[in-house]
Amino acid sequence: AEKLEESSAEAKALSYVHDATTSGHDSYQEGQKCINCLLYTDPSQEEWGGCAVFPGKLVNANGWCTAYVARG
Image 1: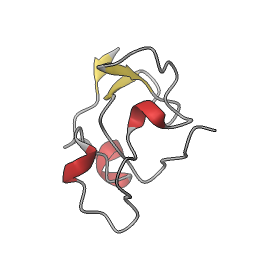
Image 2: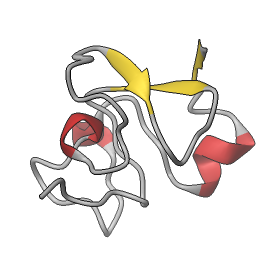
Image 3: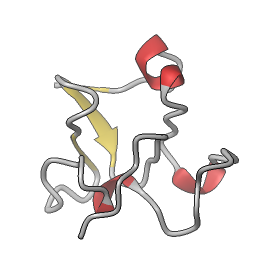
Image 4: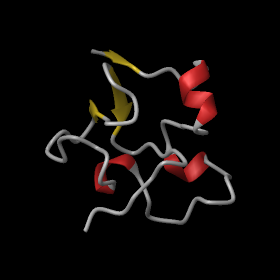
């Protein structure tokens, strides 16, 4: 799988960023990032990993998008 580009249409549609702290989106809350999101498929991947929202792409573990769902 290849890394998701912030500039891609699919990433922009969900306001995805590689670094959650730079988000600036109204929905973003401090501490939220891909690695602690329910949609991140393998939390043991600490740099780049799969995401249910972006099939076939890798997202940054420290990234964020509007589909964020806190992992129980």
